[in-house]
Amino acid sequence: MAQSSPATLSVVIPVYNGTPYLPQLIDSLLAQTRRPDEVIFVDDGSTDGSAAMIERLGFGLAGLRVVGQRNQGQAVARNVGMREATGRYLAFVDADDVLDPAMYATLVGLAEDEQLDIAMGNAWNFYEGRKPDTLVYREVADTGVITGEAWFQQRWLARYLPHYSWMHVYRRSFVDRHGFSFPLADPHEDVVWVTETLLAARRFHFVPVPLHYYRKKRILSAPPSAMAGDGTFRRHKVVESSIYNTRALSEISARETLQPLTRKLIRREFVNRGSHIVRQIRDLSDPVQKAHYLRRVREERVFGVLWRNAAGVSQYWRVFRYHLFGYVLALAAQLSLLRRRTQQA
Image (tube, rainbow, N blue to C red; front, side):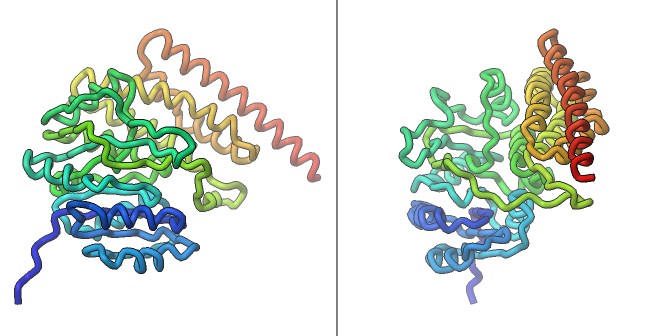
């Protein structure tokens, strides 16, 4: 009996309640001029019949699999899909996005011809007709084959590098050699993944052709946040991912193997963004939740990390200002909790 040839391309797609968007996504997968050899949907605890819709509409996709799990978030779902995948190349898609028919023919062909670790195309910000779509990267030229670190430097010198893993096709042996996986930092798990993979890639190529439609929804649907361990408040994923990414990027920037410019750029960006954690906490409506995260920022010495990595008067002033703001917020949160307890007594 003849053995089937090994898969070339595996596409991993996490899904949570994706029925409004799955028909368009699956149609775009079926329309690929170079179809994936495996399409692995990871149903992350959907309650709207997503799995049944995938099975019904995706019967023409080669290697279609639907893997079910209780809701654990997009990072876990992507990691589960990666473990299931057998292709020599990996790609990730969000369930609400749409692919250009030439997406995988272009990027897999490029990766094969040039022995790339990462092949990357451009994308459209897809506004569903509310306004004209815009390119993610405007007026950025074809890079040719360069290192991922060179691309990282180019983009941060221009102060613009969106962390979108779905714009890339990855060589699987490259991912496995470095042991990459998505950190449990939903909804910003792509920040560390994109940073780590780019800095490790010896052969990278960006082509400015738009190959992906990134749906910019007016209303985002997400499962309710999990309760904290003591059951007193709901965890806030954005705040938690911001704290995680600040610490992770600080550790990456300390690596002596990186070029000095790269380390400087990483520090500049995470110090600026990390200072905004206090603003995220300020906007929380639950005083218990707010007090918890202000205490966590203090106990984990987040502002100490930012201060040690700051450069120049403007960044030191930014860190000092937000640190002081955090103390004011913590005092206000404690007073709010005290009033609540007094009213409940």
